[in-house]
Length: 392
Image 1 (cartoon, rainbow, N blue to C red):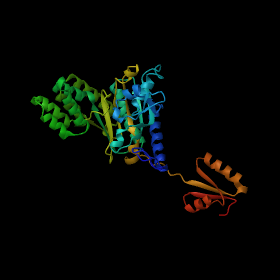
Image 2 (cartoon, rainbow, N blue to C red):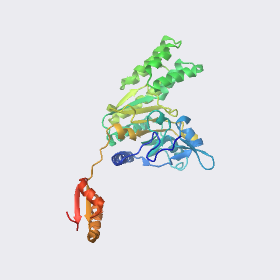
Image 3 (cartoon, rainbow, N blue to C red):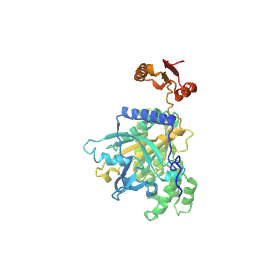
């Protein structure tokens, strides 16, 4: 492999120029402030974790992990999500704090497979975890906060799609025998990839009763409003599927009381792309963006891997996608004041700069006569240019 040039960077990572950085920080600030108003406290975790703990618990396949060895030969990983590190934190440093815990974060995460898919190998997430509450009220709170967070980020047009892992699991257990686990996984993969043609083709190859085929094909039509709950209850008699839909219906009812149901659709074909999800799952889609701008769900079994069994739910905004394609906040353009001074008037100019900065203005100072000063005063890049002992 040839040596990379000095200006090159690895595939899948990016530089953020000043305007993009300003916008990213504005989104981060507004969203975290929104989460704080809902009672979520911000935490930070290290970018690097042990593979045998957080790496394994993350439910991210090895092909997606960035692995490295420390100087003792221990395998480490760059975090691939924030949920598993927070589960570790909640089970260790926060283990004495009473539940429920409400935690928020903004962090960069790393997934190697994103590079192969033409996406980013390093990207930013802003999210929350609500740990210790298994109720529909908790799920609804997290969904409502996701909606408030998208609005705080400046995303005006979006939809939140709700699903439930248990509904599809119950449906498959009722119709496909336990010996046919490969068939179940093929059907799951078809729904995960939104490959409904492939899903139907798999069904066509199976020996199913008319009622089983009706159930498994019927899930493709279960997308809409509150009425989907009733249709789903009629579709399957599986106790797990029924309990899942009843939970989902209760969440939807709470969202109506929040006054945010207009942003929500029920989509029972959605199954989530992390295996640690155990219940309600959801994704947020913004206009003109082909990928979700937020996603989340319930993961009641994850914390027991760290020795503190507790139900949990949460979500993450895909901050990069909001930055690049979903509108988002437009940071205020603050005009910069340029103070040009001679050596004799330096003290007065610098004190004036201090006064203006204390008042919230952006100020650049420059010694008169330098080549840089001549270029800057001619560039018209400043809202105001003031001279101290210098010629106008």
